[in-house]
Length: 174
Ligand SMILES: [Zn+2]
Image 1 (cartoon, rainbow, N blue to C red):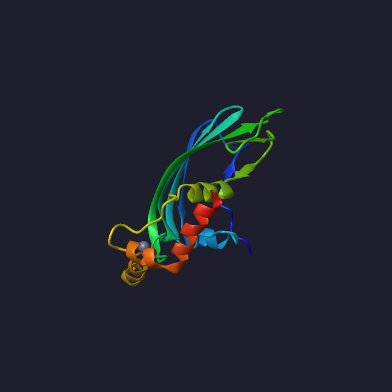
Image 2 (image 1 turned 90 degrees about the vertical axis):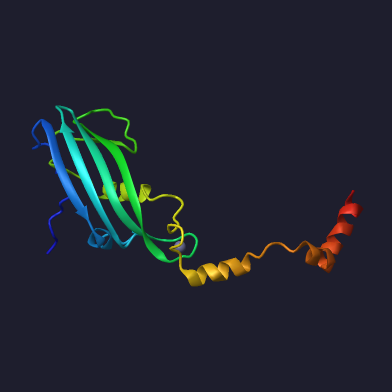
């Protein structure tokens, strides 16, 4: 049996005013989404919904940690995330320019599913640079990397026949 979708926010039946929702996002949230690159996370989503006659404003506060591979050593680690997002639901609007943060729904719509929004916001809040805090990278990988990145040896390059050949080519071309 399918479990109840807790991410359905009531629309038509929601009284005017401010409503608060809380979602405790764990691994099972991502397990339900085949396409998710994230598998492990602990994220709290605080959602404040301001219900007006023809508009609902959804204020998301997202905070927690998500497991990602480190850019430097490739080991998985938990990176802290935090973000605030706003989303608008226009109710019964005939004409609306829908965009990433606005959607229009019929006045009789019972509920709006925010699951994919929550997923998107979590993904967006993962920093672009994902690196372990200093000194916490996998020491084996770091040892290997520093071996590969030995300073460029100018003397060796000067006597390398491949470099010598390149020098001649430049002169010929001009
Ligand atoms: Zn690392």
